[in-house]
Structures are given as C-alpha cells and as structure tokens.
Image (cartoon, rainbow, N blue to C red):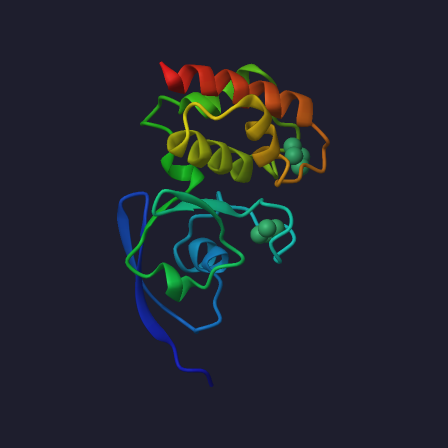
Length: 158
Ligand code: FES
Ligand code: FES
C-alpha cells in the first residue's frame, strides 16, 4: 500500500483537505477527491487540453501535474467562472457564438482562454490563435471557438 499525503487544494476559493497518493494527478484529485467534475479528462497525457485549469494565475494541464504539487496553491476551475447567475464574459461569448457542440472540450478552452487573456489582455490575434491551437476539439468547432474567444477578449478589455 502506498502512503498517502495530506494536502489542501484551494479550488475556487474553497479549501479541500484531502489525502492523496504521491502519483495522484491534479485532474483526478479535482474530480474524484473534491467532486468538481466540470474539469474534463480526455487524453490523460498532456495533448488535448480538456483538463486545463488555472493554477496561481497560469493555465495548467491538470493531468500533467501531481495533486501534491498544487498543495496550497490557488486553483480555478470552470465551476468558479460565473458570478452567481451571471456568466463570465467568456462563457457568454461561447453561448452567443455557438462555440461548443458536445461541450467536452469546452471547460478546457474556457480556462485556457480566460487564463491567457487575464495575463495578457492585449495579446495579438495571431498569438491568441496560436495559444488556442494547443487544445483539441473533436467536434472540430474551431471557427466558432475562435470567434467566441475574440468576442470575449473585446469584452474583457473594457
Ligand atoms: S486530459 Fe490533460 S491534456 Fe488531455
Ligand atoms: S465541442 Fe465537442 S469536443 Fe469540442
């Protein structure tokens, strides 16, 4: 039996005191130990970006990080984007511009785009598309995803 370590994950402002094996990924801990299933898991090896969350202000692929590495850090997931009933501008833009089809990739795209635009609000369009190209959408809805993120970027700059 592997020894478990006691850690605290701060997700969307709430502390979750959990015990995890050292090899437990952050993605699994967020979903299974903390019950926040909005973060999706696709490839489990850093390729698809479905599991993207924001850790200490930076977008991170949570399947590539151990939960223990996130101990004491500030984690934001898709569940924390809306302000009560008010959607985050990025969520609203995805809704208005049909930026999702099955929705599996959506939490990852939302967190990636929000994380990048918060750090770099005036990022060039070329760089923005470059960043978005790191996440995969199996429904191939890229045109509308890009349209949504461009619209939200304008809104977030206001
Ligand atoms: S599940 Fe993490 S990158 Fe695909
Ligand atoms: S909307 Fe289905 S995978 Fe992207």
